Amino acid sequence: MRATTIHAPFDLRVEDVPDPVVQDPTDAVVRVLRACVCGSDLWAYRGQSARRPGQRIGHEFLGIVESAGADVTTFRAGDLVVAPFVWSDGTCDYCAEGLQTSCPRGGFWGTPGSDGGQGEAVRVPFADGTLVRLPADAASDDHLLTALLALSDVLGTGHHAALGAGVREGSTVAVVGDGAVGLCGVLAARRLGAERIIALGRHTARTDIARAFGATDVVAERGEAAEAAVRELTGGQGAHAVIEAVGTEQSMRTAVGIVRDGGSIGYVGVPHGSGTGLDLSVMFDRNIALRGGVAPVRAYIPELLPDVLDGSVDPSPVFDLTVGLDGVPDGYRAMDERTALKVLVKP
Image 1 (cartoon, rainbow, N blue to C red):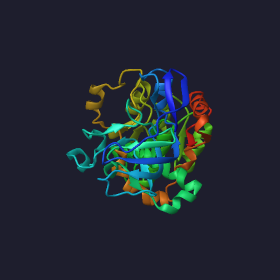
Image 2 (image 1 turned 90 degrees about the vertical axis):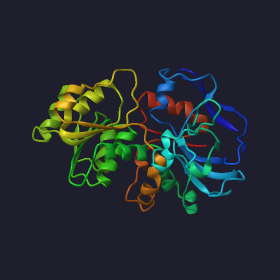
Image 3 (image 1 turned 45 degrees about the vertical axis):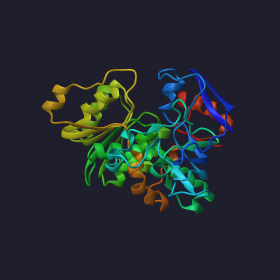
C-alpha cells in the first residue's frame, strides 16, 4: 500500500510500504476513507519533535473494516468506523474510568512499528476497545464523513478543553488559539450552553469560522493588549472559563491573564518550545484552577456522535483544503505556511 513517511525535517514522502495484516487476534485492518493533518504533526515536520527516518505519520482517520482477528467481537468486515488518535484495550482500569490515553497497552498511531493514519490502510490493535462504529449510510455522504472525521481528534479535544475549563450554562468563555482545536473549543462551549464566547485570533478566515461556530466576540490583539481587551469586554473581571489550545508560554500567560478570579483554564495545546507560562503564586492568590492534557477522545465519541449525525454540531468547516494521498506533503507545507487551517486527506 501507499503511506506517508517522514525522513527528516520538511522531508515527507508517500511511499510503498507493506500492507497491514492482522497480527494479533484482537487486531482489525481498516481501509482509510478519510484522514487529515493535525497541527501537532507540524512539530515533527519542523524537526521540533524527533522522528526516526521512515517513520509513519498521521493519527486521525476513519474507514472500512477489511478484516478482523478471531477475538474481535464488535466489528466485522464492511463496518464503517472512526478511530480515536490513541488505541486502547478497553479493559484496563483507566479505560473503565474514561482515560483511555493512559491505557498501559495503548499507543499513538505513527509510533515506531505502527501504521499512521495518513495511508491507505491501518492495522488497529485492540479493535474492540478502540474503534467506534458509524452508520453505514454515512459512507456515501461526503459532507457527513468529513464532519465525522473530526471525532478522531479535534472535536473531542475541544470538548475536553471545555470540560476542563468548567464551561457551563450561562458562562463566559474565552478561547486562546484559532486553530482547528480552538475552533472546536468554540463549538464545544456553545454546545455546553455558554452565553458569551470570546475567540482570540488574528486570521479573519479563522475568526469567521469561530463566529459561525458560536463566538460572540473576537479579540485580534496578543499579549497584554489581548488581556486588556478581554477584561474590557467582561467588565474588568475576565472569563469564567478559558480554553488554551496553543501550548506556548505566551498562550498560557494570556490564559492566566484573562481568566476571572475563581475561574478555570482547560488546556489542550501540546506544550512545545518554551516553559509553562504559569506562576503558581498568581494562580493560588486568584483561586485559578487548571485542568486538561491529552484528550481521551474515545470516551467522548459516543456522546458527541449523535450531535454530529443530526447536524446540530458540524465541525467540517475546519477542513479548508483537500488533497489526495500523494498531495500530503503539499498539505503539510500549506499548514506550515498558514495558508491552510486543516488539511483533509482522501486516500
